[in-house]
Image 1 (cartoon, rainbow, N blue to C red):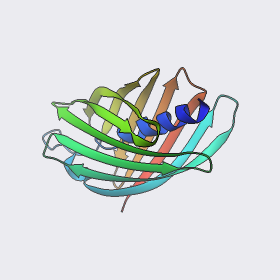
Image 2 (image 1 turned 30 degrees about the vertical axis):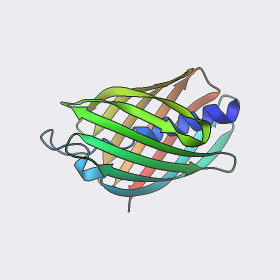
Image 3 (image 1 turned 45 degrees about the vertical axis):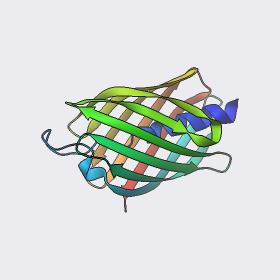
Image 4 (image 1 turned 90 degrees about the vertical axis):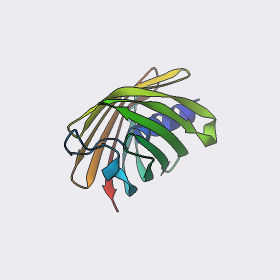
Length: 160
């Protein structure tokens, strides 16, 4: 279903929007993420259409190496409500995500270093490469889905 795939793409972007922060390696990438971030971006499909997204993310570090995320995004045609729990182990990230409105879930794995995340998010019948970087109070997220009609999703979130 077209809407479900777009929602999954947005969910996976948000799932990885939490761990990056431009701090030294000795500091958890999650500590500085605590709080609320808002912003938006663009979702682009293979037929060339684009749709603006508006998002709000709440990050709750559960210690130096764990983080809980709740993300809500909406556009003119799509809404999603994502939760995620992720762990950082010496620069390797892993975890899981769930999107309530579409009963979707999956896993996340990758690397975090120097304020940058490179990861793979997977779910049933879906995968996406993700890049995330944090500069000051801004996060930039890029999602490259595979096997869907969504070709690119980009977001910019700002700390509140």
